[in-house]
Length: 297
Image 1 (cartoon, rainbow, N blue to C red):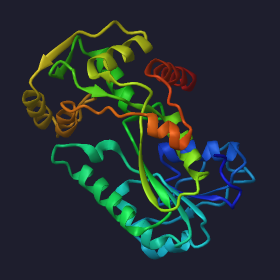
Image 2: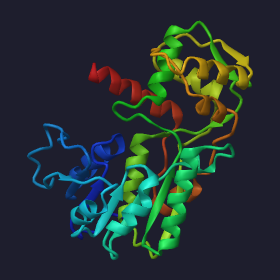
Image 3: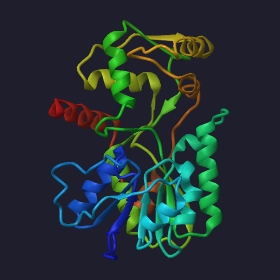
């Protein structure tokens, strides 16, 4: 499943966390990248600007379909790491023969009323109805990228709080996926001759309760094991609403707390079979994450 040499990959969202990681992986594999970003100020990292396979940056916003169509006019393979809410606009802008690799989210499976989940589901529906060749990958919570906040924010809480309040004591399951596996999955998807639109969940190598996830983070960054304090979700959500307008160093949104009540675990066999990507385990992923933080500092 090595990506076919059919020209460069047009990468929408090249300035984001997954976009930056994929750019490096593609260039390292000898595949050209045409970065498509909306920011007028963004530039590739200094060590990549002179790379012979990196095309000049193209500026286009998915809200401006004419500009996006111009940016994608010569595209044969398109990866979109921007939010799935833009899928319908992308479908209108992308050349019909282009292969599409889109990034969604397993948030689309949430059973709670959620605007972001609705937007992902709408994007997925538009893609599946389009008949276009490609896949929408739905990752679980992504961690391990440069600048990510999921693991780092929880680690910051563990450093500052004497205990960790969790709804239901943190018994719900979570199965985060490391950025390296997300990157490999996107890379592998580019090499598959998709015959129509498909969707596929990509997840970490193992599921854990949220309490055990917190304990694993503490162990990975050398902190004492946290004291988990069960608290009603309604009380935590009320506290989140009260403090939402304050500029606190540590805070959570009510929607995040509510989603801690539902299991977010998925089988990885379809991902392994379709993409050939076997995701790493949580301990390995967290070790990589905090080693990268040490190297950056």
